[in-house]
Every structure is written in structure tokens, then in C-alpha cells.
Image (cartoon, rainbow, N blue to C red; front, side):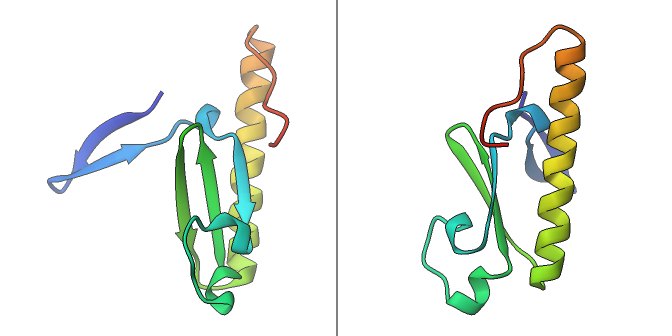
Length: 92
């Protein structure tokens, strides 16, 4: 489940791994227009009706972060399935 908390007085929303339904990379990841060179460093996490768009400092870091999140989500779904929960969504 999502939760809200405060860090240094600012509200921070969090996303549970099991909420992530898709990890998009590049131009498809950004829900608004950005320059092509900028979109190469972007990724987006889709979480139901929400989407978190991130811009990283390089394409290589984008790939590392996207692959890592993808693997974490797969592990979370595998653990849930082993405990009697459901399978991961098709997109992940």
C-alpha cells in the first residue's frame, strides 16, 4: 500500500513494490514533452492510475535503475506468490 510520511517537514509519498505495474524507458516513459536528448535518460514507474517519471544523469544509469527496479518488483511478486498471493502483472 502507499503511505505518506514526513521527512524534514515535507510530505513524502511512497510506492510499494507490488503497486508497480510497468517500468518504461526513454521517450515512452515521460507523460509530457521533453527534448529527445533528455528523454533518453528518463524512466517511469506506472502504479495503477499514478505514474512516477524520473530523469537520470545518463542512459547507463537509467538502464541500471530500471533493471534494478524491475528485478525488485519480480522478487516481491515471487515472494507474494510463494505465500499464496497472485502472480505479477503481464507488463512487468
